[in-house]
Amino acid sequence: MEKCNGTETATLNAIRRVTWLGVGVNVFLTTFKFIAGIVGHSSVLVADAVHSLSDLVTDFAILLGMRFWNRPADQDHPYGHAKIESLVTLFIGCVLTLVGISLLTEAVRSLYDILVENAAPPSPTWLPLAAALVCIALKEWLYRITVQAGMTAKSSATIANAWHHRSDAISSIPAAGAVGACLLLGDKFVFLDPVGTVVVSFMIIHVAWEIVRPTFAVLLDSGASELQCKAIADEIRSFPEVKDLHKLRTRYVGPSGLDIDVHVQVDPSMSVTESHALSHQIKRRLLQRDENVIDVFVHVEPCSFKNALSLDK
Image (tube, rainbow, N blue to C red; front, side, top):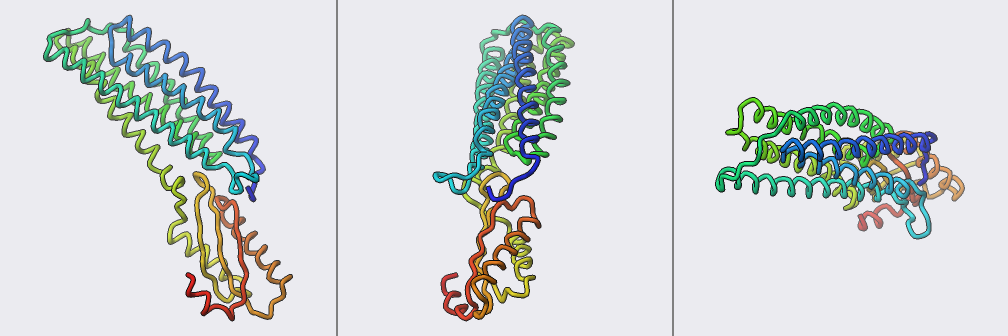
């Protein structure tokens, strides 16, 4: 990368620390909820435990991916490795989607057994309710510290992982509600347990879509918005030596890293040395103007060729 953040190592260490913390919390919660769900006769809590287990998968995806996405450009990857982060983000979203679909399928099967086959399972005990409440508190806390680390580092994968934590906390709310309702209303309302699982499933799938949707633009080399491109062009035109510009192209090479490529036209009498200096001044200005800009390529050409070159636009 052309532009390097002086605090890059510190932010990477912060992401690493908060992700390892997430691993520890997820190991505890997955074990606790599985035991509480099985011993306490709650299918919704077992489903919620599967969600916590999927958090472990995405935690390790972050720890593995961050070893690669911040590597500098090399001969085989001249634009760097930033898209690895988008791929990790996409992976997290896909894992969440599969978890949501799996839980939904199991919940529908349980509802069919209860309502059609009259094969009602035992009513839940208080243990699953306690486990769900502990999960809500822990995962909301984990979401807050993880999203803060992700925003500081401008890491979409870390922010996606934070939302995975929050989706686990949110999914425990209907789990707690379903178990609580079964306890208060009696065996006739045991069907509320798989109904809670259905609600959890749709919530997980929705979060997964919100995580995955932005990655498509990056992976398909989308550029800056029309408003951003206009601001970039205005900044370049502010140099008195620039007579005009064309072929302004941008593309995201990661969740927030923007590459800029532009042709500027100058007076034909300008020397090679002067035009070279101008290109570096433009590049430096654009890098300083927006911290998301990571590289700028400026092609300088004489304005006498303007009419001919305009045909190539």
